[in-house]
Amino acid sequence: MKKRKYQDLSKIVQILNSTTKMDTIVIDHDGNTLFQLINHPIPSVLTYQKNEYLYFNEILSKKASNYYFHYTNTYGLEYMAVGIWKGQSFYGSLAVGPFISSISIIDRIKDIILRNNLPAAERKHLEQFYQSLPILSEVEYKHLGELLVNMCGHDYISSQLISSERSMPLLNQDRLKVSIEENKDIIEKRYKTQNQLMDALAKGDKAEVNHLISMMSGIIEFSDRIPESPIRASKNMAFVLNTTFRIAAERGGVHPIYLHNISERFAILIERTKNIPDLNKLILLMANEYCDLVNTYATGQYSSIVKKTVDYIMLNLGNNLSLNRIATEIHVNPSYLSRKFKEETQMNISEFINQKRIEEAKLYLRRGNISVTDIAFLVGFNDLNYFSKVFKKVTSVTPSQYAEGIGPSGSRGQGPRP
Image (cartoon, rainbow, N blue to C red; front, side):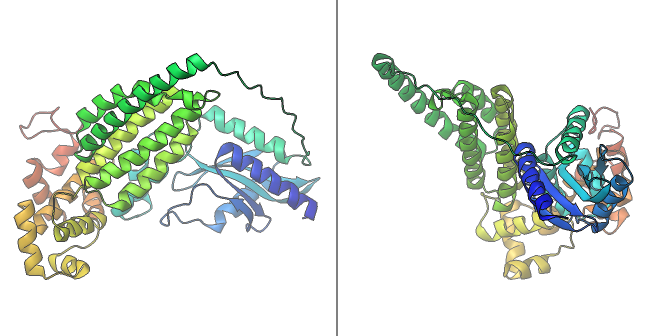
């Protein structure tokens, strides 16, 4: 390919990446990556295959230059690709993605883990990764395909910017004094509510968090900071709240590995939000997800040794776990660890592991399309009979009964299904 064509493609890649906020990749005739701009580092368990890129080329090289290709891989990641042509010569492909076209993230993650034999411990990380991806409707991804065809189907045309002069409003001194007093009251109220919000979130108190968020709805729309862009000002406030929630959850005892992923994901989602009503909905979702983290993973009430033990168990739930292995990993005497753990949690380590594995299994059983045997292995049980015995001890019903929505009383409607 000529140097000029490379330069044109480089500019097109920059434009597409900046506009779509998606990875943009140029692939040569042999399936090699020539250059790319990446917004979403793919989790290591979702491995890429060069064969995928060769497949783009195989499909597009057999079609005319006005065709685009909508591709979905085995992990449910979707891409739009278009051929790179010069006259009748095919040089490779340009792909944009990943994105998804369905909002059923949780169901998708479970199917992907099972279909690709991925470890159950990766579920939360993968869940957060998929939730950070753009969700495009059929109309939107078709428009993206048409855009790619029109950008790559002919030589790049250099453009020039014409800007209008921005007029600066005259300051009204009386109004400025009133505004300062109003902002002072708003700021004081916002900080007071923010502190109350942090306390509630650190405890995982969803009801109080939702109440405080509703009180803050007017404060979030703090648009006077950037009068020409209210949405920009509101996004800045949302970024502050994201940091506030992260700090509160950490104070509540959530391990940083969980906080890092959720914080990054919401930072991306905040930036992509296009209007203030959607931003307010996102903030409410963000607060509730941080609360869920506190309620699921918080270990702040425990001593340092027990906290390390719980964190290790939760991060390795699908693996082989035993008292001796955990004690070795956290460098403590097994007998002392066993005694300390029972003292603080009122459970021995085996009981705690089984309880957490059953909680994980219940998520899969709600799907109804995964066998009990597969679920048992996914969550770390090597014996189906033992899994069923433990499940019934914890929930008072068998795994099959739980999946069918049968509650402890034997009647339907008491189980997981609404």
